[in-house]
Each structure stands twice: as structure tokens, then as C-alpha cells.
Image 1 (cartoon, rainbow, N blue to C red):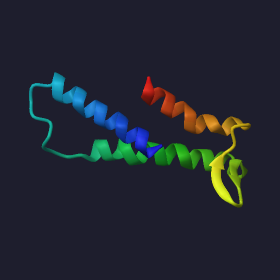
Image 2 (cartoon, rainbow, N blue to C red):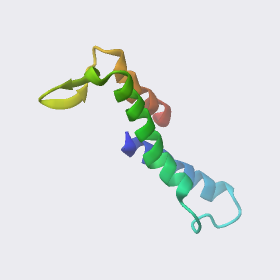
Image 3 (cartoon, one colour):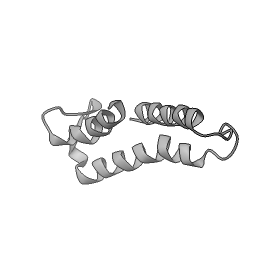
Length: 82
């Protein structure tokens, strides 16, 4: 999920570079770090907290496609892709 969050941050940064007059390449990156690492951490933490048994089996850690918990992963990715 972090990969797609960073892809969104990169797209947002490119959009800001094209639309804003000032140079945005210098300055604090806290907003980008919060978007790239914080949002996926919050979503994953909520998903694990709400349904800890929904993450695969003892052999591997993956979401079951037969459970509704898959939307905690597929939903945000769909938003970023759109």
C-alpha cells in the first residue's frame, strides 16, 4: 500500500510543480511523509485491529480474497489509480 501511496504523492508533487508559480522543491516534506507512510499505516492498523484473523494463515501474511477485509487494501489502491 505504501508503494501506491508514494505514487500518489509523486503525482501530487508533479501536479503542484506544474500549477504553482513558486519553487516547491525546497522546504519541509512532512506532508509528503505523512501521506506516503502515515496513511497506509493508519489504514493497515485499522484493518488489523478490526479483524486480526483476516490476514492469511500461519504460513504467510496475505489478505483473503473471500473476506471483505480485502477492501482495506483494494479500496485505497483503486482511489489512487483513479
